[in-house]
Length: 71
Image 1 (cartoon, rainbow, N blue to C red):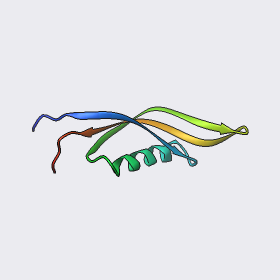
Image 2: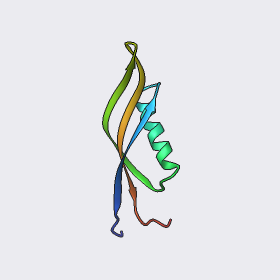
Image 3: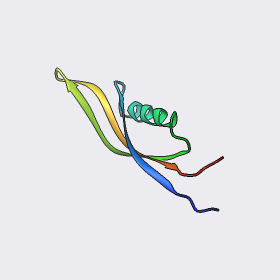
Image 4: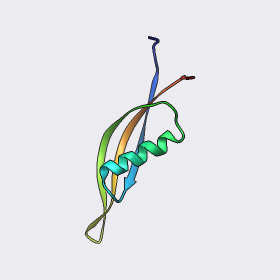
């Protein structure tokens, strides 16, 4: 197996449905522009509150992807 190099970048997904949906939104959006995603680690979760109610769930992820893959 060849040695590999990975980059890790942080992304934040949002959803009005919950933290899991927010994470899924972040991964699917990142996957549309970055190829060969490997692992996503949840770093933080929080909510936006308006008028005493939860408005938006936010999930911050560290997503890793592999450099130099040609298939």
